[in-house]
View 1: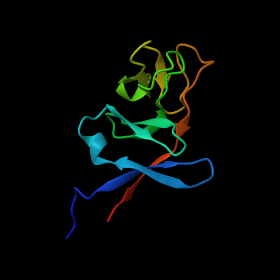
View 2: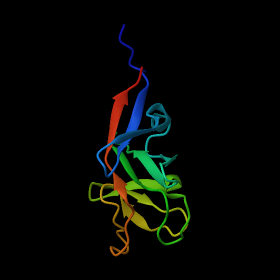
View 3: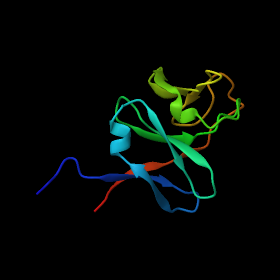
Length: 120
């Protein structure tokens, strides 16, 4: 029996080549364009997004301007076809693929590769 609602883990790639499961993909399907904050080993956080086009992207959840852990709560959109997120406090615009701040390219969010893996 094939089920289309099969649980799938969202995994982030680590610098040492490992993949870590951070959430269930269904969490991101409830509200396309919104993000979810996930805790990473070592206490850092990532913000994982499913864009309106269905692309999965992950950036750091800490706003480098306001120093708040809230990027996952930002408003997503796009600029010239590039998916973006606007930080909730300072309304700074970040490229979700590169992490670079479009308002101040000297600042950037870390980015992680993302993949889906069926569970169970």
